Every structure is written in C-alpha cells, then in structure tokens.
Image 1 (cartoon, rainbow, N blue to C red):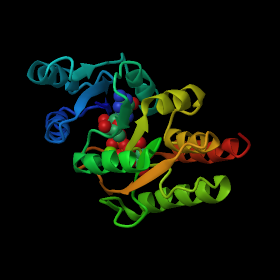
Image 2 (image 1 turned 90 degrees about the horizontal axis):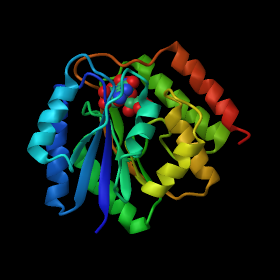
Image 3 (image 1 turned 45 degrees about the vertical axis):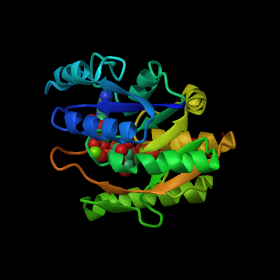
Length: 236
Ligand SMILES: Nc1nc2c(ncn2[C@@H]2O[C@H](COP(=O)(O)OP(=O)(O)O[C@H]3O[C@H](CO)[C@@H](O)[C@H](O)[C@@H]3O)[C@@H](O)[C@H]2O)c(=O)[nH]1
Ligand SMILES: [Mg+2]
C-alpha cells in the first residue's frame, strides 16, 4: 500500500496546527491510507513546537514527525529539510494556515492515481479555482507572476507559484537537488525544472483562502527575486 508524507512548514502556527493535523489525519484514515506528517518548525516564538509535541503524544511519533530548525530559514529550505525524514512513496506539501484546505487531498490522490502523474498541483487559476481574501495588489502580482512564467518559460501549467502539491517522492528528491532559489520563486523553479525532465503534471482547482490573522511576508525583494528567477530559468 502506498504511503503519503505531508510536509508542513510552520512559523507561528500554534492555533492552526491542531485542527489542520486533525483534518489531515481524518482524511487519510477515512480513505484507509498510510500517512505521516512532518512538521518543520523554525523556532516559532509562539510555542508551535510544544503543540507539535502534544500532537505526537496523541497521534504517535511515527505519525507526527517533528523536525525543528534553529531559526527562521525560509520556506524552500524547510521543504528540503523535511523531505530528508519523509518515508512515504508520495510527498504532499501544503501550508499550515488553512489557505490549503485538507478537503482537497482526496482529489489530489485520485487524480494522481488516474493519470499516474509525477506531480499534481493545486491551481487557483483554472476552472473552479480561486483566491479569497487578498487585496487587488496581491492578486495582480500573483496573476502577473503566473502570466510571465507561462509566456517566457512556457511552463504549460496554470499556477506556478502556488505551493499545494503532491509529488512522487523520487521526483521531488530529484528536483530538490537541482533547485537554487530560496524565496517565493522556489515553487516556480520546481515547475520549470519538472518540465525539463518531462515529468507529467496534473491540476486540481483549489480555492485559496488567505489566513485570518497575521500577515504574509511577500515584499519587493521577493518580486525582484522572482523576475530574476524567471530570467535565469530561460536558458536552463
Ligand atoms: N518552517 C518555516 N515555515 C514557514 C516560513 N515562512 C512561512 N512558513 C510557513 O509556510 C506556510 C506559508 O506561509 P505564509 O506566510 O502563510 O505564506 P503566504 O504569503 O500565504 O503565501 C502562500 O501563497 C503563495 C502563493 O501565492 C505561495 O508561493 C507560498 O508558498 C504560500 O503558499 C505557513 O504554514 C507558514 O507557517 C519559514 O521561514 N520557515
Ligand atoms: Mg498563508
């Protein structure tokens, strides 16, 4: 039977972690699938790690793996760090703040099986997908980033910056070894490199709902980093 590893990077997600864990666990248990969650916490000051340890006591340490790091080192490297401990045949990456709802997991898994896809990505920009709770500026930046990547790089997918994805584990390992970017551009580089390998990609429309509290860290540096990233990938 296939096993699924969920990589959950966390930074100050004390309030979200128990409920997202509950919903992920319930989804896999109902589907009778083998699973584990790898929490990659970057020394969150709000005590996220204490909550993760409590969850380990409830669900078992073989189900909830806690792989902390000493400081806030960024999302891209958090996935690389978490992947080292993942034991599943498939790896799912998702946000812990409910922007990526666990209710979509069965659709990702079903589509992957149907098409034997190497990657299944959640898309906000096809069919029933959408974004809720972002202001116009952030929406335009996201649409612009996707349009740029699809025209300049010809990625052929409708959402290159989203980060709700399912990968065959060996595919993710191969891509992670080649990745050079660390910021928001990371997700786009993954798709550009996946295209180079001719990996097959399936898409599941998702509604992305912005977190209720706290703020995103997207800034001008990220936008410039993204533009540089697209240009550097033109000639890979
Ligand atoms: N370990 C770790 N986790 C982090 C860090 N920064 C953020 N996280 C965790 O990563 C997830 C996403 O972080 P957010 O800060 O909520 O990102 P966002 O602005 O909502 O951006 C989302 O949408 C973008 C697409 O438009 C995505 O590119 C991005 O990856 C993310 O999904 C959350 O679970 C958060 O706790 C970090 O430095 N370290
Ligand atoms: Mg978020």
